[in-house]
Each structure stands twice: as structure tokens, then as C-alpha cells.
Length: 420
Image (cartoon, rainbow, N blue to C red):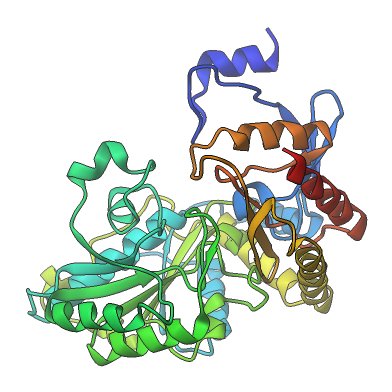
């Protein structure tokens, strides 16, 4: 049997219709920006393998640090024990935020990082004896993960449709613009006494279609939320670690969150790891004599030493001048391409933030289920490029090691899409 036949017999792939499943490509190795299939064909990974691979595939420095840690301590329960990689990583993550936060709580992916944040915020009010603050405020068009809490605070969509009757109620608002900011503030004021927390993807909504919104208006909204004593949760699972041109998207904002979620690029894309940072205000609500005020949450692989070592290695690389320069070069190249297509009628609403570039194709149907995404993916693969559009929303989010020639190949392909 071929790899494809063996895969079809035993594997269920994510976000993939199971009838007429289409082309599943066996990848046998990867290096830098390139993925290689079993026939030796290479594909430029223009979306960083679902937005996780920061420094490129099989990075030797990260691989060496993983190898060294695996020979020393591969795993230990993190309740009652600790270890150096977990401590040092927490110290470095807190320092990245200028010690605005005081504690790091580890989990193992983006959904669990947001689950931790939601539970942390709700129990904060329970611990303080305010049982009215139970609801979450969230943006329409948002996506925070696929576990039940994360789905509940996400926009009701194709991702949640089968589960909508099982999700808890959320107060939904639109992302702010000059026309609706007053209405949004009124909604917040009218529900303030029952809102436990506000969760948001700062500046760009990822799976919702790479939707951008204004930093100044988000600052204004966060100010309103702060005045109402509502806990702010920034979901930086996608936007963290340089993706937006700054280390975190929250660095564009004057108003900082009480809780911040990290994953995806946290380990440079090499290991599963989530981290939720919280301020001392949140943490002290759990420092109680009553054991019932404990945060009863954890994962078997919480703070896995190998994953923490991979994250430390990724941070080492992120702090190098060469990586910072690469992020700026990618941003500049995307900006130049953006300018070149801004007047193309086939490309709707071209937009960019840091290393993220997106636009919609002018098709009859819009949304995630638009089959043009499969057409684009297949056309791109034939040109040695891996793209995975969100329906008719085309985007790129390349690894920081991508070179100019590879970027030009991607841009040349994107220009051809106007003829679809």
C-alpha cells in the first residue's frame, strides 16, 4: 500500500470533509521554508504550517535544544514539582511584557490557553464572592479555539454549528469602527454588572477571515471595559511572537490586558505548548486559606520540559537582530505587494499587518465553505507553493526564514488569481 492508501485507512484529518477527501500529500521532510513530499517535490510553506513555524522547519538550534533536554528530563508532573525550563521560560515571557503580568500558567495548545483564561476570569469573580459576573463579552467573527469554552466565546459559525445548543451564552459586539463605537459602549454599560470578562483577538481576527480593525478604537473600547472593572483577555495565540510586526499585537495598544494567551509560535512551531499570563490582580484572588478557591485546572503535559526548552530556543532566535530584520523585510515585501494590487478589482479589501497579508477574491459566494479555496490550494501546489485559503479569503503568513526569491514566487502566484 502507498502512504496515501495507508493514511486513508486509519487517519482522520482535521478541518477536512471526509467524503471525496481529495489530495492528501505525504510530507517526508522539511527544511527552512520548504516542505518535501515523497517524490522529492518541494512546496514553499507560505502559512507557516497553520501559523506556528516561525524560524523555518527543522531548525538546527531548536532541534539541538530539544535533543539536549530529552536526554536530561523529558517529562514530570508539574503539580508538586518544577524544573528549570519551565521556570526560565516563565521569567522570560513575563519580561517580554515588561512584567505587567505576574504569573504564567502552562497548558498545551491555543484552545487550552484560552480555556484557562476564561476559567481563570470566571472563577476570579466567584472567589471574590460576586456571583453575578458570569457572562463573557466577545466579538462577532471571532475564533478562540475548538474546545467548548473556546467555542462558546467564538462566533457561531460552521466551526460551532453542531454544538451551538451546548455552548454557554455570550454577549456579542462588533469590532469597533467610528460608526458603531457609541453603540458598543452602550451595550457594555448596560451589561457591566454581569460581565466577567472581555476576550478579543487584538487587531486581527484570524480564522474569522484575517479581519483587521483599528488600534485606537480598540484602545477606546478597552478603556470603557476597564472602567467597568471587566477583566480583559487578549488572545495572542496567532498574533504573538512578531507576526504583527511587534512582539505582541498588544504592544500597539496603550491599554494592556489582565490575561494574555499564547501558543502557536511559542515553541517556534516545534512542540505543542500553551501559556496563559495573568496580572497580580487576577492571581491574588486565588491566594486564599479556603482550598475551594484553588484553580482546579491542569493537563498531563503541563510545562513539558522539552516543549519549554523548544520555546526558550525559539525566544533566543527571536531576539537576534537577524530575525528582527527578517520580520521587517517580510513586512516591507508584503507592503510593496499590497500597493501593487490595491487597485485590482478582482482583489477585495487587500490588507496587511506585519508579516500577515490577506485579501478576498471577488467571487459569487463568500465565506469559509467557498470551494474556491480547494481550487487555489491545488493550483498553488502545482507551482510548488502551499496555501490554505479561508474560503475566498487568501492570505499568507510565512516563516521568518523565507527568502526574497521565495516571496516573489508567492506574489507572482497571487497575482494570477485575479484571472480565476
